Image 1 (cartoon, rainbow, N blue to C red):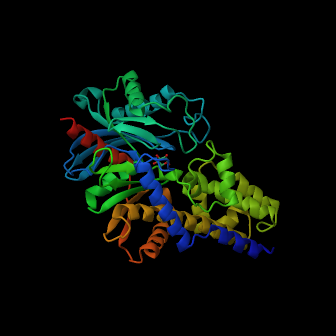
Image 2: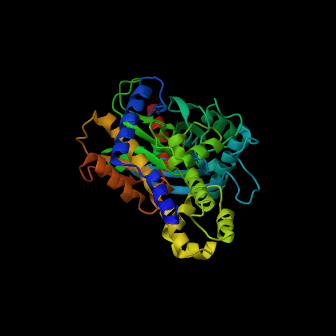
Image 3: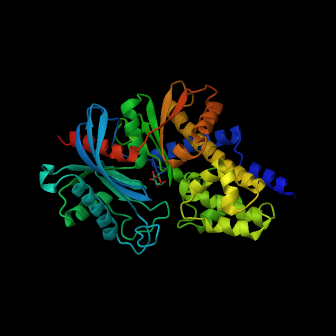
Amino acid sequence: MTQNTYLDSFRKTFEISTEKMLEIAYGFRQAMEAGLQGQESPLKMLPSFIERPSGNEEGVFYTVDMGGTNVRSTKFKLSNRGFERLGEVKSRLKDPDGNYDYTNENTSAEMLFDFFAKNTEKLIQQGEQQASLGEGPKLGHTFSFPSRQVGINEAYLIEWTKEIKVAGVVGNNPNKLLKEALQRHNIDIEPVAILNDTVGTLLVAQYTHENADIGVIMGTGYNSCYLEGKHPLTGKEMIVNMEAGNFNIKLPLTKYDIEIDKRSVIPGAQLLEKMVSGYYIGEIATLIIEDFYANKAIFDDTDSMNKFRSKKIEIDSLDVENYILYPERTTHVLGCSLDDAMKLKDISKSIVLRTARLVVATLFGTLLHIEDNEIKNEHVIAVDGTIFEKMPNVPELMQQAMDELTRSPNKIVFKLVKDGSGLGAAIAAAVAEAKSY
Ligand code: GLC
């Protein structure tokens, strides 16, 4: 095979046709409905015990946001559907220089939550003395892993995703673990709400967009939630965390995806997430390039290939972004020809385009459920995460794919919501407070 036919045949395996998107959408809708009824389904359909916020949420709230790459403690002031960020401390869970790692199996639940408490302590020290905080400030906790929720402040971790392996958290309530860690550090702040990052993103969007009813995270992990009009548990509106990253029906898995899955902490789980999210797409790109190299379809010399290999970092989706944006720079960094840099660009673009189309297919399936087949209304889909925010053209590619499916341009629109997981947690804490009176 010539170098270019290798590239062409690769491109084809990454293409997602309109028909394939529809097939995935129908499968997704079915899986949603089975999961909601408590039947066997790849979609966990986890209740959040949170409905649409009233917009009257007010006060000062602390938040802890645990997503998988960083932990963030923030203090927000909410009023009049607006907010002010009064302070923030962000720490990486894994030190890039290798000094510590709070994601591996040698970390205990206590160690992890003490790390969160210390982060909150730094935030308090940054601002004011604890004594002047007033009595028992409240905290909202965004914990972005599949958790069986039984109330707004009580959830149990089902399993870790995004390759985290910390011991002693699965089966436990992260808000209880957080509360105990805060107490160990003599911090008088009370966790009152726990939520998923998708739910936070939707809550924030609902402040400004009346039609917002789907929340999506396209970051280290992939997931979506939506507002169920009549939840089987309550008969009322409720936001449902679908854990969409675990969807696995009729996905066009390539040999690369199968390999990524094999190498992962939980093979067989999170198949959609492993095809579309930041944690994995850099690794997908690496596997493809290795394959091209083995088949003499890229880099004539070993030097460039070795340089490419040495650049690989753990979460490297941003490299994919760089390869798309800066082919000239790629030639310098890897010492390769412009032709090779253009191949890297082509491969990266195929991965990103596939991401956009797979994600949109599942979102269209969600709309089919919400509208019961015929999409008559306008909807706003709130999205947060680096893949949507930073990857070249992703919002446009998603809009095109959605319009292709609805055949009604811009009826469904995507809005970037920044910091849904931080601010959303403050809104959830305020909602929980209002409920407790
Ligand atoms: C993973 C988690 C999910 C989270 C998503 C985005 O898929 O399981 O809970 O929402 O990552 O952070």
